[in-house]
Length: 351
Image (cartoon, rainbow, N blue to C red; front, top):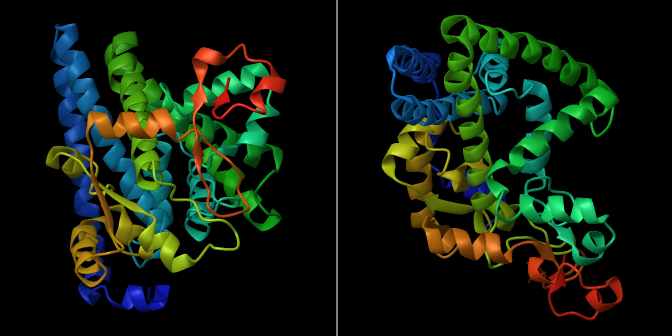
């Protein structure tokens, strides 16, 4: 495989072009949709219709986050101040402090699929899992299995906690991270108060709470399936290579067109990992160029119930993180009473 700079040069130059007007037009579209959906929700009496439109609103909110995501990668605009402003607004609407997200996400891009250093959906090893308390074992099990779709909330909480307590972030970044927490607290509070003012507790539930849960669902869903298959996508420190990690191990998952439209093509994830400065509206074209140049390396999957089940039922732990080949291990909940001495000799890790 070519080295990463060569792979980036294989993408047509027009895929890197971004304009403030075009980028802002997508944000305006989302804000108009949010206002339109909110007005309809507040006017309805049917709880079913309210809930249904609230789910759609959550998808639009996910699109707003994707625009903040672009800003964090400087793919929204060439203007740093505009990126910062848009990033703070869009991420805060989904309760993510902008710099907390940006800095942790940059770390993920730097170490994508590294078995030790990556942050995104990094699995525990068998030994690490067996060293957990029973409570933490249960929490970990469900976060990678039946409740995987809200695991991003835990990541969001712990990264914000790290910023507050001075962990993970270096001293030069800590002030930025803490400032963004304060900004998010203000913007998110205003968002919540406005929904209460407009519709009381019903407005809060249908315009704030449900959309936030839907956003967390999609964030977990996208990130898990971008970086996890039942064939291990992880690479050991000795084998890790930027080109292979970003191009060969990132996964393009095909979703229904309406999902791609609402969430600004974030599922077209391979070119985004090859070069994060590509704006979301050029990801499809960049993907096709990479697929044409490196057909044997671009992984594509079609989202389906059997595929979801295959991943969440198998990809729980890795046998170890330092030596090739890395193999997935399944946590078998039905054997959760197995004694620690029996666990060590079991072919499957048990909870």
